[in-house]
Length: 386
Image (cartoon, rainbow, N blue to C red; front, side, top):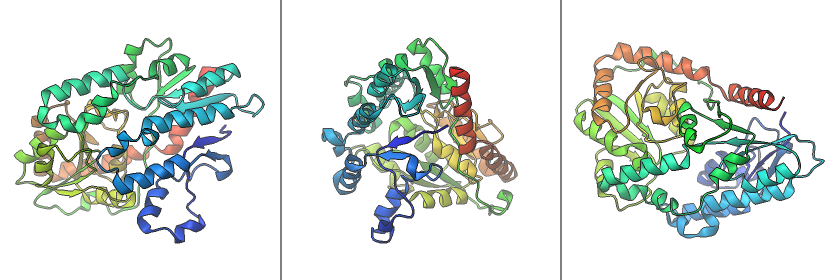
């Protein structure tokens, strides 16, 4: 089914450079491996992405890359779109082209010229809905608004999302939340919802055998922006400080948010951790909190559940297929610190229920594998184009 996979940078785990590069650089590159795709099917143009990664390490921690047009994520997406469009050929042997939103406008234009079907992968909420959520949040929480600066600035730039949506023969969304926001795009056909896969569950001792500590080990992993609902999480943590130990993993978007700086000073915080270390941390913690205001489908939720770590999430985190409220996790409304507090208190005081939810979480994650995602994607294309 797969003819070729085109990307910016694809790293080979068996590369001869692995023994030469510093461990930190090697770990970063290993995040860009595609183990399930034969290397001879991968087409890449890595130059600008390598420069971006190097620039991030040198001086890009706090959004400064946004001031370098050639290294902005949106510019990289446009460049990749152009790269693919220029190389599509009428006799190459493929019948359809699938691309992510924000990086498909020129590709789809060329595909239509060649008579190819087009599949759009919509990875986040419809842009006008997301804009309204973020602008509303900046007004509600001015003390945290500086963490939303990148998003607020991006709203003033032209977007091609609607053009890409109208050019797609098939629209795929990772969650019902995203699909629901696309109602505002007035699509001719309903998007097909296909949840992302979760990592394979690692063998581990029975989740119920986790040490019954006096304090609940709580974890947050993600970008440190108010779009993740940070203020509500930290408010709940402040109210439950006597019964929780909190670890936060995520990089700063700005150093100018005093409310965030003060909150981080009261928890264990890692700006960056290798992915393998994050997975190990998930296996050690009792619960992951992810109270996002808008997300396509939070991958960290599936990762945590695969490590038998139940979750506290909002409906807007896009994990409605994975998280069964009260069984594999707890679903709370957005912007509701009290609901998060109640969830933490309930889990801290009922460790038998926590152990039961841990087992359920791991079992639920196992039902959503990468292979299952791929099969569902292929089935959706077959049904749409038959």
